[in-house]
Amino acid sequence: MIGKGRWLLAVLAVALFAVAGCGADEQAGEQQGGEGGLADRGDIRIVMVTHGPPADPFWSVVKNGADQAAADLGVEFEYRSPEAFDVVEIQRNLEAAIASEPDGLAVSVPDPDALGPLVQEAVEKGIPVVMLNAGREDWEEFGALTYIGQTEYEAGVAAGERMAGEGVTNALCINHQQGVQTLDQRCSGFEEGLGGTVEQVAVDGNDPTAARSGIQTALRQNPDANGMLTLGPAGANPALQALEGADVGEDFVFGTFDLSPEILQAVADGQVLFAIDQQQFLQGYLPVLYLTQYVQYGLRPVGEVPTGPAFVTQETAEEVIELSRQGIR
Image: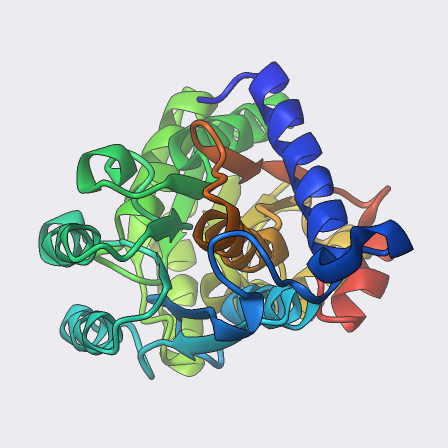
């Protein structure tokens, strides 16, 4: 896990890159238009390949961040993702992206065995790669420039500790997308942090009705559970509906990873104890920024760049709701 000092350096680097890129000062001359260095920004094309379906509210914010970075920097940008989580389709998207010979490639790696060799292939072909959101343990091995995202296991531990502090001893961990390494890490960390009993429950995040039904069944089958953690909006939104008619006590505690308008409102209303914010706007923005700076100036961050976990609670929810309306959180 990157230390606070290095994280602050990374933040400062972002600020310096933005100043260098935007060139607000008239003295910037030609640099103001993104010219100079090793390449002109107008000639740079970056492709991002992720595993998140476009309808997922989490990934729509990632894309917003990437689109904003491309607009700010004046580079060409393409975003590719599967219609539903499908490793084979992700492989095809990544293969097509590599074949198009972009100047930079940003990619999430939920399945290192299936996707890692393709990342290595891109690097061997001279395409600089930044990994984001999934694949933290493998980015150096695969030859990526850096990794941008959350420390998932540690975030799960923090979630468990918060729930334990509220008296939760027996909890459900709802996994809405089986086969994604980062979600498994969240549940494992949660179990350690809670120090109690955790029952992992698999539901279909691509089918909200089926997910709600699966969560309702799990609640009935685990009447001693006094807490529940979901791993993203595709699990959390159906869970909110499932809890409406569930026979759980007043002390039942519900927390979740990631944000959606429904989740944020539930946090503001006190229905959800916390939502873990991994600041996915940055997970979209920073890869485009770093790849542009690398292609143009040969600059790169040293080490990985964490974007979470940050906790949204009832005290901070209203501010985050306003940013969510703008497509930033």
